[in-house]
Image 1 (cartoon, rainbow, N blue to C red):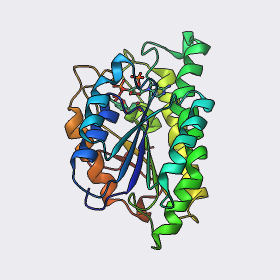
Image 2 (tube, rainbow, N blue to C red):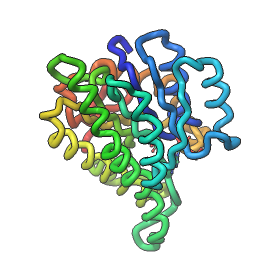
Image 3 (tube, rainbow, N blue to C red):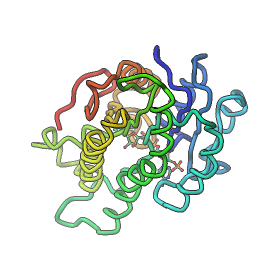
Image 4 (cartoon, helix red, strand yellow):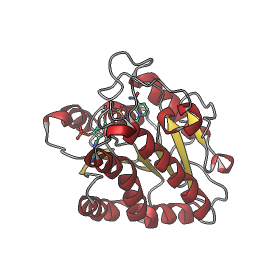
Length: 259
Ligand SMILES: NC(=O)c1ccc[n+]([C@@H]2O[C@H](COP(=O)([O-])OP(=O)(O)OC[C@H]3O[C@@H](n4cnc5c(N)ncnc54)[C@H](OP(=O)(O)O)[C@@H]3O)[C@@H](O)[C@H]2O)c1
């Protein structure tokens, strides 16, 4: 990133795309001062990679427990992070945590529980995290003393998917219906646009990014790209964003996605 944020928060930071974001930001000797790597179970087996990385970058990476499907957990995380931001506020919040649910779930036999679980993580999670950290994003926008918008000033990036594109869903591959996931990402996209409009006056940038089809636990081994390429692309896109990208839906190659 050429224009780098000082304080960053990433959800779902213990594996997959979230972990690679932490790695690339921490290893890119830049201005990232504090990187709050939030994850559900910091001492669990799935967080070993993050723990190892944090030991290498003790001065930058701070691991914070946060289950995005649990409002109390988000509030606890905000209590831990708030005092560590000092007067600088939070420059960049990346809502990355996500679950896919039952990929075979079709409208005809959709289980309400699956919809609820997927919505709790993919939609309610980002909404609650945004609400809890908004004061810190506003603080960052104010102390920056600059006009305009950028990911180094104050921004929220919501990680969505081409499955959250209604236009792209026309004639979709019916062997992978993933209906709850698709609907949750459409809701996340709308949340982003509404937040962008509402928080324009605060000069906080809100945008949606699509990582591509990536070889992670969610994307599977047949994914088209690896985490390194996806994250490298997304960080470049974030670095290039300004007020003209407020409410945008872009992919990791800076291509505009259809809603
Ligand atoms: N991979 C792809 O091809 C692809 C394509 C389009 C969009 N995306 C999006 O990219 C984001 C990251 O996906 P990924 O491929 O890295 O998936 P992944 O490898 O399955 O990782 C998902 C991450 O989300 C975390 N998470 C799940 N539920 C959580 C909760 N309740 N609270 C906190 N963290 C939670 C997981 O933590 P645990 O280890 O604790 O479960 C894990 O860190 C998701 O939003 C996904 O929808 C991915």
